[in-house]
Length: 289
Length: 270
Image (cartoon, rainbow over all chains, first blue to last red; front, top):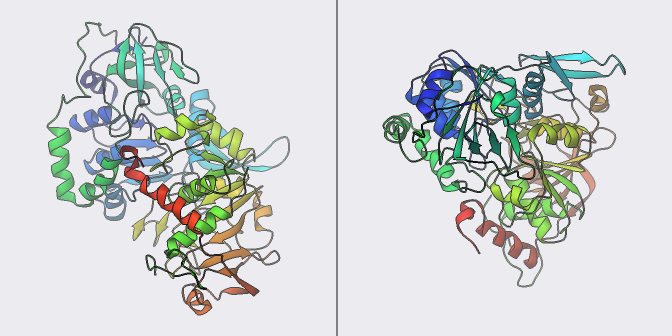
């Protein structure tokens, strides 16, 4: 059963230095509030995993939380580069970050294999690209039935998956809808999981196409209204495209970045969207599965 | 020359346009109505949305965020903007879009950009400089390698100059025709590969025998020497070089209306 707890408690409980952490969200429902709490709690040496590391991972990298990045596309969508990511990879600032680089399809199948508890999965991908030979956890395999040569990717089992959803009920069942990315696979592949939500409701109303994560596959649920901003939460608020564009200038310069983080993240433990919930639900702790 | 306004050849009061607008319009025209198109963000998305607003109302736009049949009123800033999901025929998960739909060969046209292209239309979107010590770390592969591998055909949209049209890619992110004839087949790639490369100077197509890109069409006002000077290899040129039809007033009006609503777009309307 998922424990309902404050975001600060959940991060303290579930995310440890040196962990492999997947904060997923494909443009939509990116868990910014949770990532900011990881930064405030000064986690170090994390292996961060995500298909589309965008602003949140730029912030985690720039604040020195990340030792290794496993990813498939690292940019500011429609805007340009991630300057903190580039500074780390090109110049080792604030610390060197090693990379394991996939295609979207390949990294997706690493999660799917993890969620299924298979050691690997085959796919048609990577052939002829320079990723072959450079990317760890990638191999070729011959189909035992047709003889066709296919790519194989190793299962990914993060220590922790962190995702944001629209709603949870008081028992910790979670529902999210709209573009759902690989959140379900990330949660099911991970050993522990934290879901932040826009609101806690008495009863989840079934929605067509929604992803429901039963309470018993989630370790902790934390209330974080606005917790996906500046990305968006369908049905709650829109993507703040202007901020994505503004980030380009904020993040380009090390000092300006540091000042922005100090003002907006480090000094803001309980801004709107990251408030803790005091609804009296006792922690029942422990791991989700 | 990007940004310089061009007056179409011939008389008449046609609207001036930029080379970038010519490129986008040429790309939109390449999409036949009813085509199922896997769209990358940025210029390809703008061109695909222009096609849907002009000659191809039944173009099926597929974005890697899992939105199939998206009908945005505003060109999205990202491949996962909310309006794509709200207007889609269906929204599927990322594992599903890459397996049931793309890998299974259900997409007609993949529409890609890149930082570098070579004579066999292989693409680099990973690094400029050595991989381990890059001068410029680019975003990386995303969905491009599998789009390039699996779609029935691929259209590449890229500005043409000595930084982009290179003799040797710094990194091969996505395979066009690899090292030449037969290479796609040896790699087991099931899609047809690049059929069109559209730039701000003209249009190139692969030679069916050699697989090398051949300049087939110039945009109005562009000289062949200029194209050669902006190509990092000895450019093959078709015997009969055609000239693109300049953007019509209707195409330009539709494109500019889309751009006014673009990006910051979600807060403005028009």
